[in-house]
Length: 506
Image (cartoon, rainbow, N blue to C red; front, side):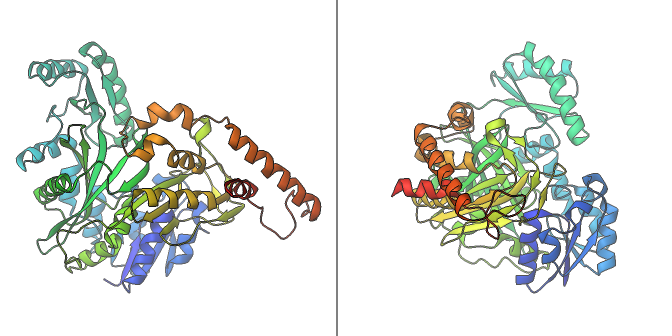
């Protein structure tokens, strides 16, 4: 394997390209028309345009991706995450073309992609899963009958309806009774059909106030499967993760061992190879239940890398070439604590509505223990064509309190001008008592969101904002502005709110 086509865009494409170069491999970028000047294009050794903005005509177009690989002499394809990363038919098409797919075997992707079949496999592998149906349900009457059977078996109400194919909260509804189930089934089935082309659903018991905890696994072609600890992913909005950390503040060393062993059994049950993630619900009692397996590298993989000292993408590349996993110490122990904030082009104080525009100024944070992963730069146009994820900000510390303090400093240092972002939301979460205590669950944002997402400023923030405005006006009076701008000529805009905040701390 000498040249890898990266079938993705944005920050994960930059991340994979960097790992390829560190492994001594060449990297080929692909780009849609709006992405032609993106950082991932310049970072690669070669780049090929694959179509217009619409993902179906570019990043989801299998034949155009394979043609790009043929034209550039690539002998492998890394899918990243999102787009085609968990499509078994894409992995099969790559292999039929005589290329190496940097990821799990197509059979493993298919086995874990169909949720009810995966639950059946988990039962055989003695991996605990949430009580419920293990066969797809395709009509409302059948759903009611299944609910009655479930209740008769003392599984209990309420229940969750979930899409057999897919995830991310789409095709998911909570039903309090059989009467409510019928109407919600139609809604969930329609949403699943639209999102995944499959309206089949399954039912499972609702676990009250669980945490979302996932375990990173790594498997090679030499029969070795490792678990690299857990990540806490319970800060979510509409089942979309916003903040992740490792290790979980709720997981003890013994629970980590148990969950890790279950994750390894899950991976081995489908002949898994490469990096993957086994997701669990962790109940307040300490019981944990299999949710699904993500058969790809995860958005939040950097927190595991920071805590366990491993480069997961480079391990993927090594495994794809037939090499063994490079890690030798087992079991691996976490070192310190890491937190990741997803910086998205959304306005958290307006219901997380998407924000578009051109990045006029960007100042990423830096310093010991701070990691900035981005496909962003000044001049980048942010549109509505793709996922709103702009960048990932990761902070490592000696312990959780240290990591939170470092993240607060990094968020204060970060400046993005041109679009609204989730940055102020993350800043508020870092200072929120329930989050800082570590005793939160997946209902966290529903409970505290009213104060975290309230656009009104408190007295301290109003005072800082007033100082910032005064400083900005003073700067504008002293230095001539550039034509057509309120900013001083030849200078980036000063983050006076940050200056005022730091002055206030002093």
